[in-house]
Length: 292
Image (cartoon, rainbow, N blue to C red; front, side, top):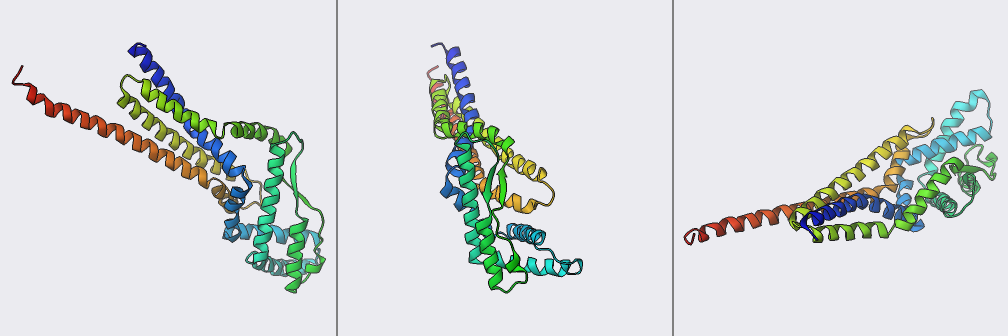
């Protein structure tokens, strides 16, 4: 194989490897982090203690109760204030953490079943079990109107029907590529370095490309967060949604930093070995001068 062909092949393999590295991180995160119920629940569980999440839930539950339990205009403000304090107090109890975990488990199971099947229509979950738990707690605390809270099979949409088809295609692709994509990226990078005419230069390019891919992945996560918050409907807490987004993408951010560190380490290794080789050549040059 001629040096030109080797250089071209090496460059192509390294570029492809650097493109696949962030995609491999994304597919691994989607398959083994988001797609795994245990990891998902572990990521979401700490949010039961997040102040923004608790405030958002207290507002939503209070508004929901007042929509179902009607009071006179003169009593709306004091009842709203009292109910909100009672619900906020509920969000600090072990019962709330149990309800939070149950609701997240149900939502995750419903979404995963929809993504892994051919079902059509929106994905919904039933809030009746959580409502029953809340009603029992507020009744035990002698909160007015608590015994009038209707416990109905109220379904909320966690994934719209028009979003399901696109998400299903992407998720299926990530599940198939979850393990093989990062493995392929590593194999292509190693092969690209081995076939290169100048392996040190190829190693430098691999390190720089990996660091750049990691940076782009980090930027994509940040942009995704901003777009998610910007597209929220009125009345939804941006702080609470941001906390949920951060919890779900925490592993992805760590992976992007790890990839960046790996790329920098490879780059520094290539630069240091190149500097050492130049130093050795420079130190060996005077010894050859007398024989010239």
